[in-house]
Length: 531
Image (cartoon, rainbow, N blue to C red; front, side, top):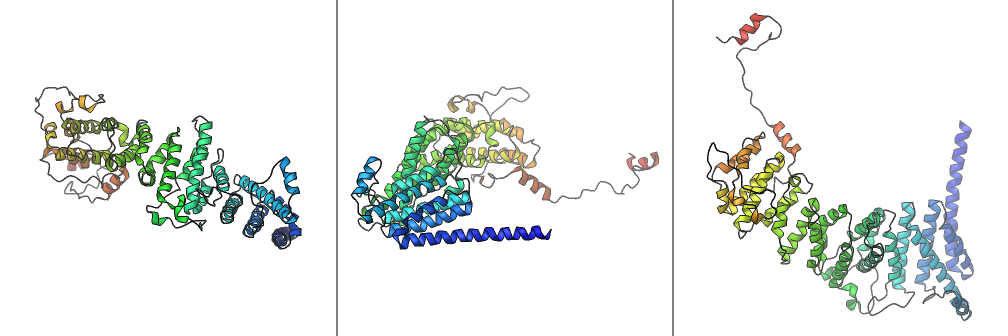
């Protein structure tokens, strides 16, 4: 066993030494290339290692390229202008000096390096992808400070849009889930100029990919797009735009990227461009959950989201419930006039509403929507009656929300007390005129009915429910019940509370039975004698 152990140790030491030697060789080559232009061909050895199958070799090569080309950019040793291609290249090179030929040569190698790094963003190993991403963003910073091509100075100043577009295109892969890499990229999104041009790049990429697929679902791609867009947040004030990757020396205040309104427009166009296409159902939920907090406040015209919210509201189920948040913001903060809103809200009241994940949010919003004292009587009565009917099959946790909810509706609209004090004929069956299947609350005949369902729930097996239902027998106070504490209550919490309650000891008999199951009739007679 000893020889094999020793051989393993030797092999391990040899591997470590070779790794260190490769790293030293790379650092030496980078140093040689930067010190003497005669060693320019050594750059091929560095680029060759970028295609290695060994993880460490690739990461070391990426770091070497980062150091080499960042220095060349800073020293302005790369060719400036558009690279010649095809037949033009030979004629172009013929008219260059030795110094210019060197710069052209290194610029071509730099372009090859960028292409390989972009390909590495699709690498199977995360460490390689992360190294490539950081290196490319360092190149972007270098190109911004030392532009390689003439850009549109009136609009984009000196920012490497083409390089950033390439990075965004790779992050938004159609086949590979890139959530981890996108999370790593979030560090760069904190810079104002990077964020602005990333938003433009996303809009351009989405327009090409989804338009080409004619709106067909591409789940992996759309998840990547959502992951990247949801990481973008914009400062609330223009004074917060202070962190730039590339500080423009001239006319900085006139730069689009330095203006908050331009950021809001880019943010708005990005989201609207994505949301106009068909989305997977689970993505509707993800977007609607963050819409009111993370999307609408950053848009220059939030009302433009009405088409998306209307489409989401018409989907039904939990998606319709979540769309209420966005509609609530638009109606109350931006004076949106939404036709048939209460009719659609009424039709969301189905048995499933008590079992969905977003039940608490739904009842919170419904409570806000029905809080106005200017609502017509027939509408409030329709909501109260429909909730009462659904309560007959609801679980106890839901009933502890619904019953105070109905009582609050009656408190806000005293005219609805007619539903409680409806004259009826005892010992005679009366058919309920309420039409549960009617979608229009104005036609459901709720005012002709009564809240007999609550009377029925006074015999509920759960004591808390029976107590809550019994409160309607007494005159309701003017103070509304606070349902906010009940919205998140679960069945487990109810059971835990009941189990922890102290119970009184009830005396069953004066003398403790010790031989109840042992003896004959004499023992039984002693304990069960009736007199």
